[in-house]
Image (cartoon, rainbow, N blue to C red; front, top):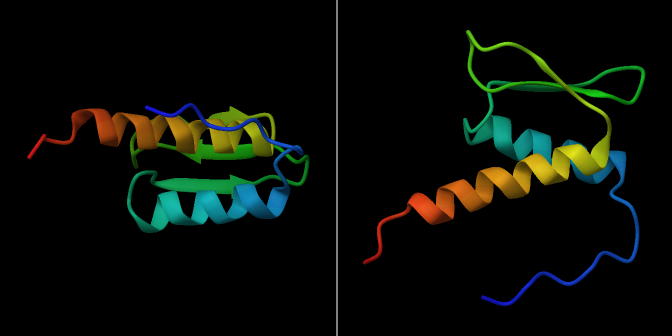
Length: 77
């Protein structure tokens, strides 16, 4: 596997918002909301506790973790 190239800049709120929207639309998260403080409130399932992510970088890290989990559990065909 080729390692990802390092980012040349910090993730933006817009980028994090796009990823959050995709994760919710694909039902990989129940909710992801940007708080006025710049933190993100995320909930995995309807009955799960709300987690607080510090900022856009944490949202992107969560998206990467979810992608990794999906790819590693996918059946090899």
